[in-house]
Length: 455
Image (cartoon, rainbow, N blue to C red):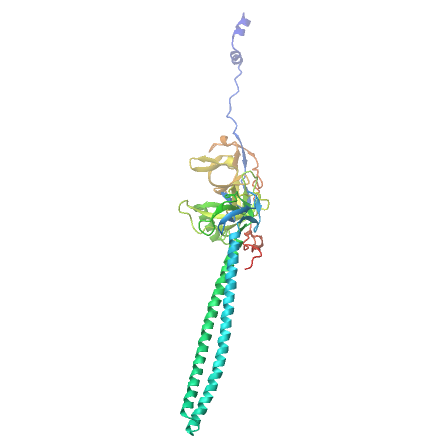
């Protein structure tokens, strides 16, 4: 019967009756967190911008003379070289105008020859008149001496005086003829210059019937087909097509006022060379490219802040030998935003936020957790730069952050902060480019049009 009673009593009662007590429940162990020292290393901050690619040169192909479009000599969208023939305007009216101008030049030359002949004739007449005047003067002087001795009648003296007066008149007439001939020469000379100018203008117009590429690059589509009458000149000239250069290539980007002032302060303090005075390096990537495979340099910074946008425009230039860069594409641009310096960096996951304040959790020598306010900077090599709040000697929580309560004791486990070495393939140092590495735009004059025409 006692056995049946025991089987009905709970086991705890049995144990209690035997004098055995349950083990006391102790406090839980401190939570485990992963800690590490911040990474301290030399870096350069590369500021990121979104830019738009643009051709360094762009030309609207327009006719300089009017006429019917006779032929087109380019394929739409093809690459062209400077001086390539693009189109031809009907040359016949301009050839006729050139022939007319040449005829006027020949006529002006004949007028010069006629004026020179008149001058030679007048000079000969003057020589003859001066000789006759000299002879008449001698005969008059002799007659005046003879009349004093009554060797000659007075009537003879009057005849000699009349002959001398006629000789004087002949000299005056010859001198007037010379003056008239010189005036004819001046007129003929002016006519020659006018005719030569007409020939030069006609030659130019004839050459302009050949429309050639002003730059090397890629040509657009045809806006006018052959057979159409096109308008030339400087105003209202017909647009035939456009050409954009491809190598090198510009990229434009805008920096806000805060960024502009940062660069200005860095330049003033000597920490970073001014991009107005030095060719600071720039890296570029297209939307589908990894890293930043294109390297160039800044070649222009605008002279004022745009009051509408509050930004200032910058421009960089890049070589484009493989023609990957195309005008109009968006691109990511990286420019140096600092000098090289020792940066303190932590993982983004180790940074918490409390309203507007950012902080990291530190573990001291007693394994007690305490928050530390920090000022984060940019992301470099996969880690966040800490501008203020840490000196690199602290142990910060990088794992199990949710278990690290301020004031609590934890069990720290040493971890390692991994650095993604050059995750964007940007260097940790830079220097302005030397002059022999500058990228410049070809500014050679247009090639002469060798048409064989008389100029």
